Length: 298
Image (cartoon, rainbow, N blue to C red; front, side, top):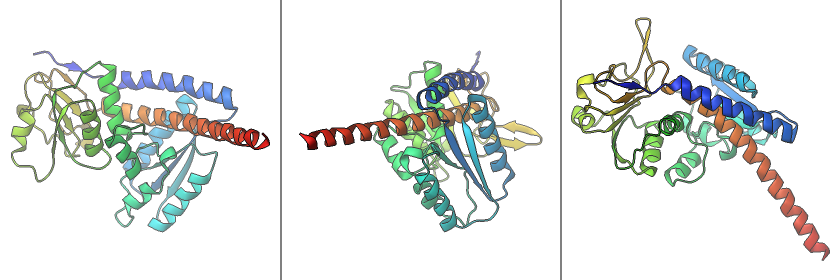
């Protein structure tokens, strides 16, 4: 059968164009820039590379960045920096690159970010809002996957979706997002028995486990949709978590060029939304304050 590629680069370019226009509109309205603070802890080369890619994307659309590179740090020290950024009115979004070094309490640090500035959707509050289908700045990769599905008008209602991976920043949020779109969800993980059978039964497969080509092409159901959120570097080549599904899947995201570019574009989208929402909140409080004064005079 002929498979169709879900072109993440095309989706990302479309989102970036929309973001660039919104950034311009924001600057014209408020006469100030949008700024994203990025934090990297440790000396992981991949993390530094990812943040550099995100910073370059910010430059393309006109978003300023303030970068923090912390070779060695403590949980308490990182939380202190996050809290200062929370209080800084010139900072619209905060991105703490994950994973953090093992000696740092990741959850505490993520939860220290205020929901208004949590542009990567990593805090417990953001996840809780996603689970209840409320307005939230969703995790960039899961939200990026939804952006891909929406861009290609893929209706997941009633479809059986198998998510492989249960991380709090990818597997669990995408399960909640797809459930909110009325898909039927199965979440698989390291303790799942007969994983091949679960994958074979799925109309949609979302792979997010970080193991190169772990999901075999032979496991896939014919005409299924494959969303490969894995990115692994093997023998000088980038490969996903799924063995190349061409010829079996009806639609699939390639690696590279699939979920990755859309994740970064979605982060930009979240940052602009965060900045705009912050301004609207200030305007609303100012309006309420004036109303209270007016009523007091009466």
